[in-house]
Length: 181
Image (tube, rainbow, N blue to C red; front, side, top):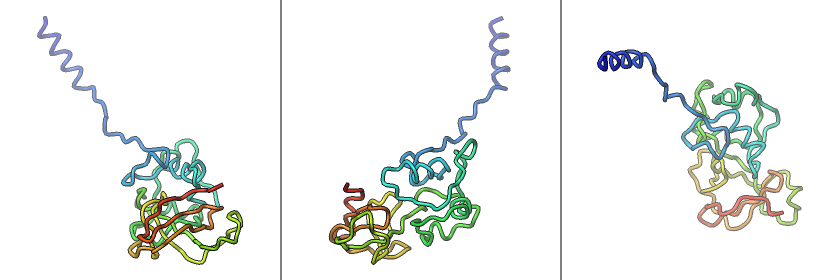
């Protein structure tokens, strides 16, 4: 009887499977690793809920219902919204085809900066130079879209992003990005 019960359980359990491979995608920008695909929810979080508001688009994109966890392709990221500060020339993004999925490290920033200190921070509408940096405005600043030539800074720089100030040292390293007020 014990063998029959064991065989019956084995037979029944052979039909029961659990799929552990179903991916769980991040819904916040901070929760998305640099090598993970970016969801609508994570991009929305980067635009709206991120304290530094590094991304700004001129149109809204659908972040409701089933679209929240939809992974963004190059077309869905760039085709439905006009981004004012995404570096669309960064090779890992520009070399993708329209249907290829975007990972977080594909998204880098293009910032207009100025060293003009006489202009109030909330009045800066454009800069005298363009720099490029990663999507969190940390690490190193660069002078070209391919991010191969380091920006040699030495002080505070005001951006066109509604008063965002960044501090870049002479090695090109960003030591601060935020809103001083």
